[in-house]
Length: 519
Image 1 (cartoon, helix red, strand yellow):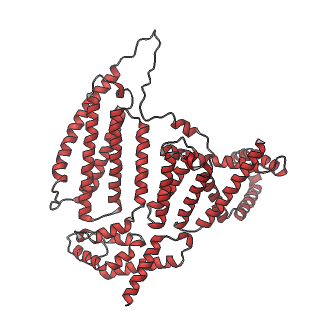
Image 2 (image 1 turned 135 degrees about the vertical axis):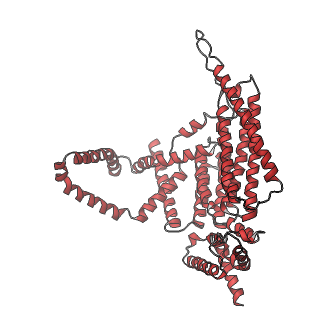
């Protein structure tokens, strides 16, 4: 009965994988991402939920599924760069968490997903052999084919070694070997075409998402980690003298001295920033705002990260349980709090830069990174105060990053950036070239506000330093028309799998603007 059940399961798995590969091929082969990614993610998620059952899904798996739904829909709605990345990652995380309900964190879930794909080829070889009926010629032939794979590989290795080591043997076998490789290459080029390889890739991707092949090694590894630290007492034999506390005490004293010094130093830096950056900030004449934000921001961000590493190092073990002097913990908590104040200063630097030069991807990225850094500092504060583990920090902060990643997909950043920059109060410092580097979604917005773009060009021509290329309205209009023509050509050749609501909105707005222009 077990053999029959295994045969039925192997056959159903193979059929589902082949059907999924067919769907993958129809959706993605030689096509751009759009509705196809949304449909594939939703289909894979629905099949996994049907196979596992909703009630058996853990809460981490359900949160990951929510991320799949939001990100995949946003691929169609906004078609931003981040939406496909978030959709693919959340789909990988969801299928891993659904296949292994005991997993709680995203890093271990990614390890489970990667392990699943690593073990998939071995499981596929076993599954193909199990599909053939017992005691059939097909199963016997497949078994012999598997048995001969390793000997043939070893034979090829030694064959090449002997050719290199013996010139006469190389000369004797050169003709035979060239003919054999030519025959093999012709066979593979005939059988495994680009389309066939893509179809096999689709089967590989789909099977790894739908089924679990990896052992529960990742789960066993994660189950060894907990949110709260546990003091592991190592009992020495009674005849041995107890270990001295001197090394721990010396480390504590070094840490106290270090934290006193860096707290004092950071207090001075924070006092300067609060007085200078927080209230009434003005750009002095000849002041390099670019250096102030770029180099200064990156240096301060690195200092915050380094501070977190130092705290993690000193509170990695027994210092968490050493109650002789509470000042080490108090100084560490004070330093974490001061780094949070420094993070606010970094945010304000970036805000002042946006107030002067407008929005850009990197400036938005800095804000998102600072948001995650705040979460990291809060969890680090709890780690020191409540003796949390490094696993706790990893688990909470990766889920925070996942939430931010999904949240980024819900905003049409290109249109937001262009809209804010067109209405900016400092038109002479806006990067006009960046308008043309944006996606096609901003075309209607730019055509409707060409007068504002021309005003920004005029203001920029009055600057002492000119740092944009497009300063002539006609040249900008010609480049914008060329961008529109490429978009229209792409729309004419677009397949239904590549359709997005973002492109449809852009096309409708451009058609409406052309009608208005004709009237």
